[in-house]
Image 1: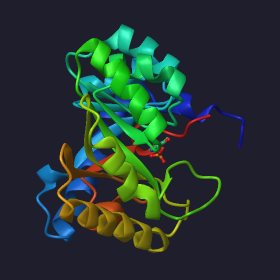
Image 2: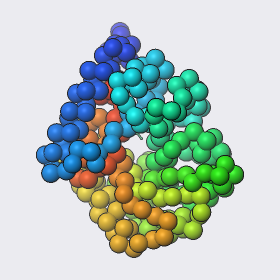
Image 3: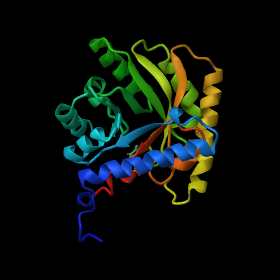
Image 4: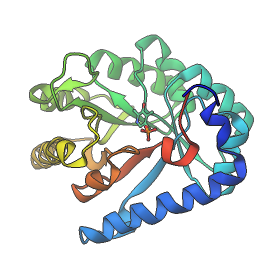
Length: 241
Ligand SMILES: *Cc1c(COP(=O)(O)O)cnc(C)c1O
């Protein structure tokens, strides 16, 4: 298995083809559930992917990139710029990195505590920025997963609502990993229900437009259940090391 480095097997010139296939599958999934394909945005997750391949993805038409590590993202953003793409943070964010995160990212998908939200609020305020965020929900309740518990999500959103420099745009989840999309589907449905519930509360400064769910193995089911942002790495860039 380890005789070739799989990430090296995907050359920059392959990325255009792979991206085209992914976009076709995204579109087909939307149409299969009577959704307008334009309502599903593709975030290409480029963690561990070298700059030349990320550049190839941008040239091939990627407009949103997702990164998991602040330092790695900073280097890529310095190399590639922010003009043609918006950069999203999808990994676990520690409060002590909030300062950098607000400088670098248009959307932070992974806010799961009031402490982190307050730190982001403070740092965004210092920059004169309104920081868009999603609330990461631990929809499966697994102890090892990051994210706020489902039952505590509404309370967290209420707590964030008064923070002036933070705008809640929706919810994100990472369901347990299953190879069978139908096993993850209930978790996607649950996130959609939670979105509906919070939306009904009409909390000031909170819009529940976005649902960030679905990765390489399960994005079709996620789109069918209402995803507006799918986070896809492997299908575009190949296996990570
Ligand atoms: C790595 C990662 C992805 C992309 O996963 P793939 O299975 O490679 O598509 C999506 N979301 C998050 C939070 C990730 O860490």
